[in-house]
Amino acid sequence: MISEIPEKPLANWRGKERYGNELLDCLTVIFKSAGCTWSKCRMCSYRHERYGEQSCVALLAHLRAQLAWVQQEYKPDEYRMVKIFTSGSFFDPDEVPRAFLSDVAAAFRGKMVIAETRPEFVQEDIFRTFIEGIDDGSWKTPLYCAIGLETSNDAIREKCINKGFSFVDFRNATRTAHAAGAGVKAYLLFKPLFLTEGEAVADMKASLQDVAPYAELISMNPCTVQRNTELEYYWKRGAYRPPYLWSILTLLKNARVHIMCDPLGGGQKRGPHNCGSCDYEIVKGIRDYSLNGDRDLIGALLETECSCKGEWEYVLAREKPYCMPLTR
Image (cartoon, rainbow, N blue to C red; front, side, top):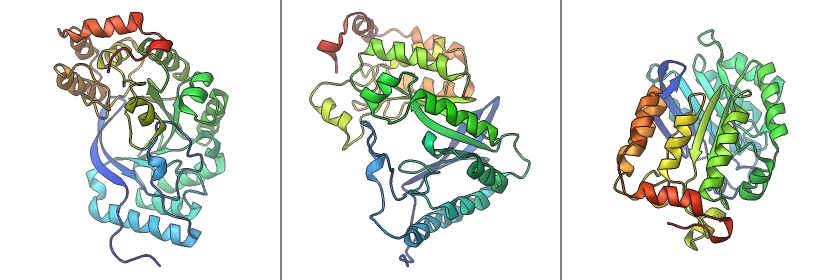
């Protein structure tokens, strides 16, 4: 048995999320689990957040305690959408016992649920059962399967991120999810390790185009340097710079569909940043755009006058893989 002291998830918060033309109150929960079974991505620190080796019964008790805490802290009428994350994959039975899926479905019945998982854990029967648990008729698509594809380029995903699956694996998983009645949300990583700014922009442009036919929702995540990661190792030695905010604005402006983007650590040295003088307004504008979908706002932000825009343009034109990064 676990302690009777209240057990909290790794993180939880309420916010707003754009869905179609609506703004939904959203609850985000990151459950502490048995840990990601892949656990090799170069930029991820969440894989270190896990319980030690223990029985399935003990793990289930820990997870149920976290869920009970969430239910106590947040009233059901305070949110309509729930985003669920773990250290790796919510639908991995070695990380999250199957019995806990039923608990989560009962707890969030009637909500729209977005749950993250790797493609190898997308199984039609499991998804159908989970959807039956959460679906009360409130939503046409009550479940969205969120997959961290990161890029449509297999070489970049393998060499720069070490994700361990292919674009074909992603496409197959989306077909399985859709067959089960679930939607798909794709997470894309802007500027992983080893890419120049220009290479990263070109990769993201191609990825946004490639992913659009398979995912109803797309989120672009500008890379942030998390602690205790391989990415941090290179960053500390001057071999990596997080992306420019100017690049993010360019990608959002030219995207054919609405792209969600929340630049975590925006304006900080570990996160996407410009020079420091123009960062605050641009970060705020990007977050506002994710909620209101106002393309004119992105265009206006791109017209912002700042001396660092020339630096960014120089980096895009001159930075080479063998002499990167040119700036910090």
